[in-house]
Image 1 (tube, rainbow, N blue to C red):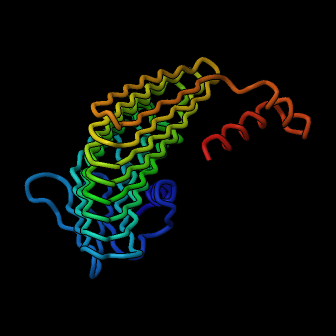
Image 2: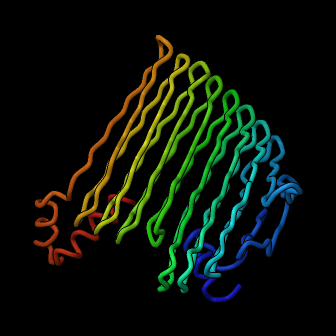
Length: 305
């Protein structure tokens, strides 16, 4: 990897070199490195671009990294990655994409990730998106995440986009069986004329299953964000969705919830709060010696922490 690619890898995965354990590294549309373990296998698809990640039943305390790096301007990359997590496994999956675009053509990555989470399995999924480069070409990402959770299974999904992505449509669809749980925590910061749209749709099909979707975002300058959240309660279940957003400059945010209860014992809640930073918060920090800009930055960092 060159210095730019190493910087992207550090930003999206917190890594300075290739990770220990299972991993698959994709750079500019090509697989450049891979390692498997006794319990985690990674297989290249034969019918389309992408990989199958197969985690054996009972696997504990292991992780797999699948970062994607784009540093070639004008490249359009699409992958289909399927994750098969066996019963009673407990694993961490670290994904994410970094784009460096120093040219005039758009660079784009679309990743379609499908999870098949087995009975009583636990998954922590971390996905971070980052863009850099001083070119005029756009940096575009359109991730899709499809989640199937069997009885007693659980997934925590932490997704972050803090810098440099000009346009993104982030789609997540999930269905849950009996006693399955899903927690999604989303953090987004947009600036300039950037557009970020997130679209969640969750089917709570099983008895005593539950989902919690929490989005925190900051829209700066002339950027625009759209938050769509649809939860369908099809059985005795709990569903909660929350959107908290800070507006700065001429930024704008739309929050559009949809709750559908198709069962008498479905309990569904939506919360939303959108507004500017309170003046008294800024004044309080300025009395401690911070400038107004420093006070705003500290509030934003704390909000998105």
